[in-house]
Image (cartoon, rainbow, N blue to C red):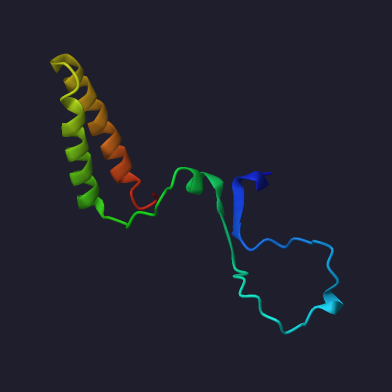
Length: 99
């Protein structure tokens, strides 16, 4: 179903029509034959895994981020935005262990 989401990087088995019996079986050509399979969107957007953090770090991050954003709104929108962020933060904190 979602097979096109995966990308394989590294070794690729390509049949170029050579005669394997004519080649030496123990000959090492120095090719790295390890392949890495990962989700395409991770590679496309250069996403990196973030270290886990607790509720206190999450709340501190949200407060800092909210302060940066509220400066972009006028006074009326700031109040509305802060109410929305407060509600979402409470919801996320209630589900924090599931996330």
